[in-house]
Image (cartoon, rainbow, N blue to C red; front, side, top):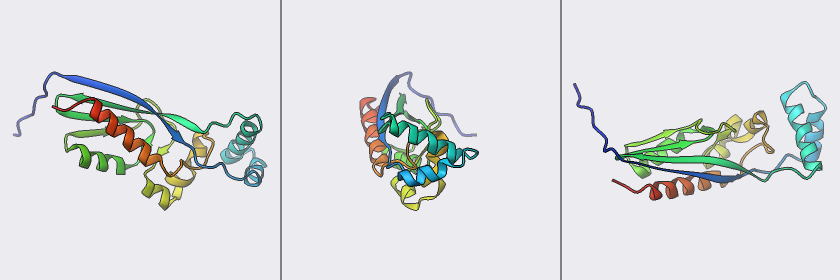
Length: 161
């Protein structure tokens, strides 16, 4: 039987809200065409986006929650949204094998893709945001850079064992 490691009784935490930038809203013609079908989620979303844009209330960013806990020599990153696995692989490589990455923490607003996923397109990178009611089909291409910079800052702020 393998011996269980014990953790030092220390806890350091940090929470950061990162303003993730929305990509462009589809052109008005595409929104108007989709809005003609109010029985589909995409049609209802398009009508809402036209209304927000008309009223000048279309947000440019989303307050994305990212949290870091250091418990002894264990690092725990909690990320909002449905995070793609690339982040876990990247953070374990950067911060070590005792890094634990959790998603769906503090908020569920959309997929959080990496640049690779944005380039691939598909549902996660190209069109899932409308399901969540967000004002774009995708995040700007700097989403991974913003999330990674914030994670690096939080890990630095929590120190090391």
